[in-house]
Length: 455
Image 1 (cartoon, rainbow, N blue to C red):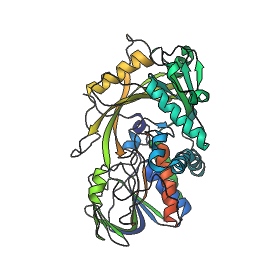
Image 2 (tube, rainbow, N blue to C red; image 1 turned 120 degrees about the vertical axis):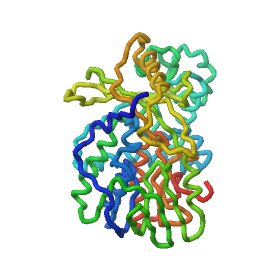
Image 3 (cartoon, helix red, strand yellow; image 1 turned 30 degrees about the vertical axis):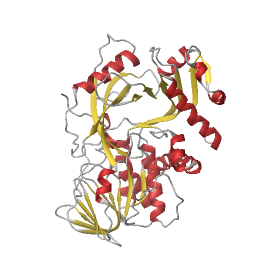
């Protein structure tokens, strides 16, 4: 067994001073969780309202899922967009996709206002496909996007795909037939099982480092309105009709509003004094999934990329696909390196279990990723790879796999920006902006992200 070692945490300032809550406080807004969701929520609250904000983190800044993710920026949901349209209607599904796409501009806004110079890459990323069913799902979503005026993906299908004739005629203008070598080139593999690919804008970002630098900007720029406390676990939240009490053990924080910016899988209880139970729903509407990732270094001889390989491996662990990013990475004083990060294996966290980042990294996950790296990505089963990093993180999946953003319907003192659903960077940032608009008093249109009673 090996310990959890994340490349994103590795790049953080190890000399940064932090402190827990040391006294009882009152504030207008309490934000719980200092990952990318909490930091983004604080950013837009401070930039767009005049509210006083206290940010509380049970551990250290960005040391949760934000510091243990794949670092991939992408704007898709982990469920079919056409399926979302079936549930919410065409207009709301379209608005939901546009909302996530808008977070690219919000990310730029955060970079510009905070004066950041940390690395971030954008490029055309790819997804590899091995069977007709998945090809048809991508084409169905592309058809929906074209119909409602959303930007479509570039989809390529191999000219010698044996099921090519089974693709419906209605999709004929939504993909291109190309030699399989073109597809394999995009996917950087020699594995001829991959008979199609889809391409769209993606990116790479160390979201933990991003949070560290944004918080430094916020603490300097809004020292009169922002307080930040780490190692401050909130064990209980008591909701009244016009305020909340947050129990931090030795101290209590009173706030007019409280915003949960977490995975939704914490050891926390919510008591709603105004009546209807919230605690049960909170602990049943988000399931925990532990994702496992590994990283190794190579010479800086190729550009950044992000690629998904959609196929079911023989691993005994869960996971429907492997994902990979490549980006420039400084290690032990050398800036001329690429970090190859690979993930895919995962396990569901039992409802009664508590996740800890200190748990060992299982050999079965290590082997699964190594088999993928050597046989599919590197294309050399005999090649030995020296993994510098192995890490795992807790992902929180909402029941409908759509981020929860907005007011708790049973008590509007409580709001959510939670549930990473595997790909949380852009949804977290959009969620922060949407929360700030709600706090500012804007009347928001109904959204696929809204918390709903009984869901």
